[in-house]
Length: 312
Image (tube, rainbow, N blue to C red; front, side, top):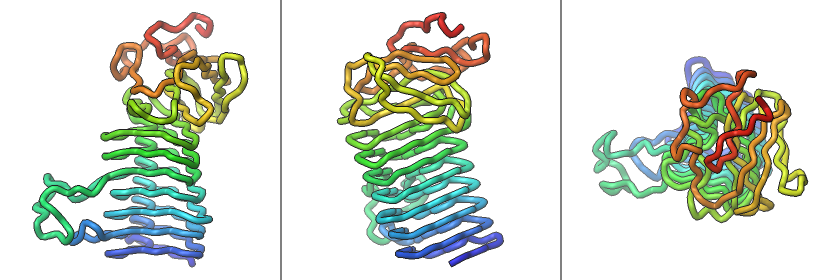
């Protein structure tokens, strides 16, 4: 099925959109797929299973008031002017998902807040909304680029399986951004972006991770090696960056790893299961960090010590 819409959504529904064992191509001047029910806090859902979905939209790619679920042998490609995927509860169980978004690649947000309106008239609603706002990645393989944040949850972020390679373009945006807690207990995570508002994972995360302030350009290869020089992982950056977060089952808390970029920058850091802070103990502003002679930001080891001069 091919849909082309001028000044409207490609698919628009009130309570539910279900795509199962289908091939759908959408070109829309507004949202690609929208499910919006402003009368019921448990309505406005989207499910995609065993399908191929390609979306090009001027506004959001896939947006729902409530829950978005992707599972089965699904292939989703989104190019959007605003958020790529947005819902209250974004549940990415299976599938291959590729996003290039003009705002956040993946966003979890609650439209029913006390600040927005009196909720007493809504179905299935208490005065204080208790539905969790979250992004859950349990088995999907995701590659996303956001002009603003990569993954942005106004609630929580859970990564239990699958893979996430998420990148942010704009300075002072973040590859990973959450307001509640962020936990990794499985899977592989690459978060490549900028250090101004960078986040790793929350204290108590089950899977250790590294967070390195190390700079590079789009097209650079990022390589992580252990203390013996063995390659743990490598990937190619699609954006300019000065902050990298990586987590998988081989990363061990307290062990030392080296993050190297193909243009010669590196950071030597220890993996952690704690919340990370930058050398100053706070989020670092680029205005406070002098540039290297080649125009890049320095690569801090992440332990409070200044960088060496080997790349100057």
